Image (cartoon, rainbow, N blue to C red; front, side):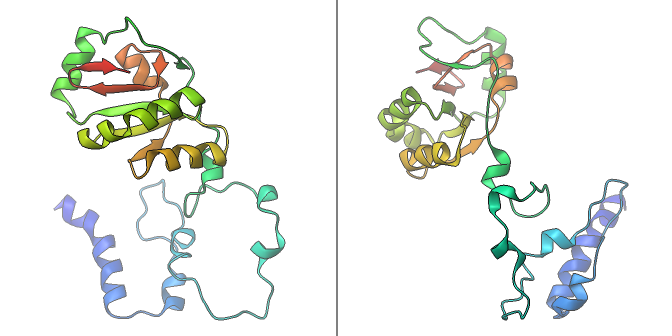
Length: 194
């Protein structure tokens, strides 16, 4: 019964859309469920309900310099809000002689068997990604960009990845759990390699 109650807001919103509720009526909706940590829904719906008709008022976004606008945690993700990405405890370098701890290997073998890799936006990581890209694709490996300072850093990695799935995030906790301190690396259930 409890799981049905948690689906009610989603079902209700779906019904509103299917019955053709006007954008104005939906825009007035502020909260669809309150668990004590609720945030207004309107900022999340704005991209979906954007009015494409010309407005007589000048758009604020056209007059504001994007670098001077405050960072918002609501709405679509903005790459600038995610940068810089840093991973204390991880440095770029050679992993020669490194091996995963036996308990880390056991966890990897039991958990997600999908290979993954950690890279930065530095020259060594970009060379490594270029030379291993086909192998990573064949393995179905997913990546984590653990060091990037600017949007251009992220763009260079994305261009080099040519469609490989890579997310941004600090790799510090993951590296500590696996007992590694260097990147770029490929981690599989069988071990770690560069």
